[in-house]
Amino acid sequence: MQKSLERCLSYTYQAQWHATIPIVAAAFEALGSRATPALDGIVLLVDDIYRTSFDSAGTALYNAALIACIKRIGKAVGVETLMRLLPLNIFAKHPYGF
Image 1 (cartoon, rainbow, N blue to C red):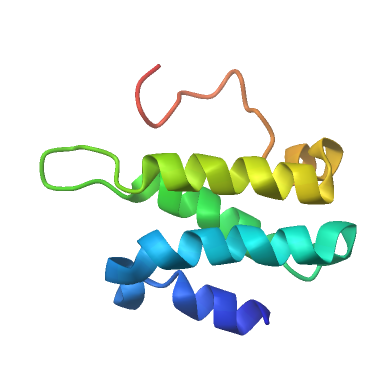
Image 2: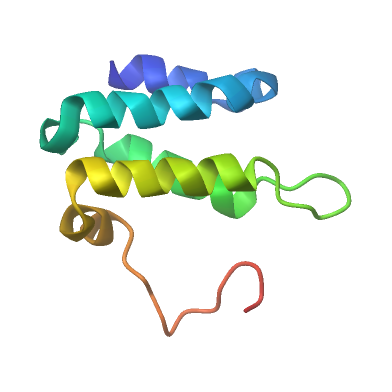
């Protein structure tokens, strides 16, 4: 399952992310706390896409869908698990400059 989700989120299939991002979230919801540690890499991949996907004008792509996905993952696996995977890094410079 992990390899399939990784493949869906690869840049090869970027044109289909509007459909695959909700599927990723649904997979976490279906598995709940059992999704981790097997799908921890998927959480990191979703975060990486959120931080690096911009169009030529600098507009974040799929921003709303990715944020909704992270929220759904957090509800599925628990906030503690999500924060372990994606620490806040409040002292690090945010990739968007805030």
